[in-house]
Length: 283
Ligand SMILES: Cc1cc2nc3c(=O)[nH]c(=O)nc-3n(C[C@H](O)[C@H](O)[C@H](O)COP(=O)(O)OP(=O)(O)OC[C@H]3O[C@@H](n4cnc5c(N)ncnc54)[C@H](O)[C@@H]3O)c2cc1C
Image (cartoon, rainbow, N blue to C red):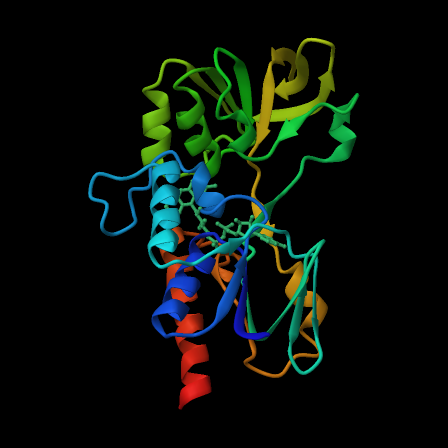
């Protein structure tokens, strides 16, 4: 069988594309390597998505996305897409299966920037999003970074833990609203002008050596979460972009949103891609 469309990724962008394709009566498949919702699962409180006047947590928002898929009877293929090739149609390969489609929507989102390897001694475990820390309680957690994600993670994790935020700069690169909220939480400590020297794993804790205003310091933590930016994951698209027909593929969502990465923008790009495919086939 050749589907009209294959969608890779079931974050807000991929799900929006799927709902629109369904409405248009087209055949499609959608792949997800992890959980429905993608990055938005990490959000503490979404306050800028129209229709949720009191805000909604990322988990609850993702449950609604899941519900929307169920109501429309859209099944997700929970497999990671490993390769995509093109020979008169797209072939999408997972570990166990291959699928064919006429069009392909790449909605793979972003990947986290990693800390420099030279800073890490004895292979300490560094977390790069919230998913593995959601059930942690009564721990000392260091969050490295000063952007929206760092502060959003701090507000989430501070409900049950002590949080330290290390920022390299004096001025936070974050929405003032989030900084203001974090400052009101007594178990969030914000440290500017930090230059991390190294992060060392010991048997019980992780030790962080750093310089602040020229002075050497050391602190111990149970967990380290680095939120130091993300980059577009266009790796699958890159492998086929030279050989595919013009306008047969769409890269959508955070992957192409530069520094304006928001769920509503991703959703818009998903709807638009699905509509463009419909117009191309029908008119
Ligand atoms: C802490 C935090 C708070 C946020 N708060 C807000 C907010 O309040 N409001 C707002 O609008 N936005 C917020 N965002 C941003 C929002 O999460 C993103 O803009 C949105 O999730 C992007 O959607 P997307 O579908 O483009 O990508 P993603 O959500 O990243 O989804 C991509 C999906 O593709 C899957 N995938 C990738 N590669 C493959 C593959 N090879 N095979 C199968 N599946 C694959 C991934 O597992 C993922 O599920 C926040 C982000 C963070 C980190």
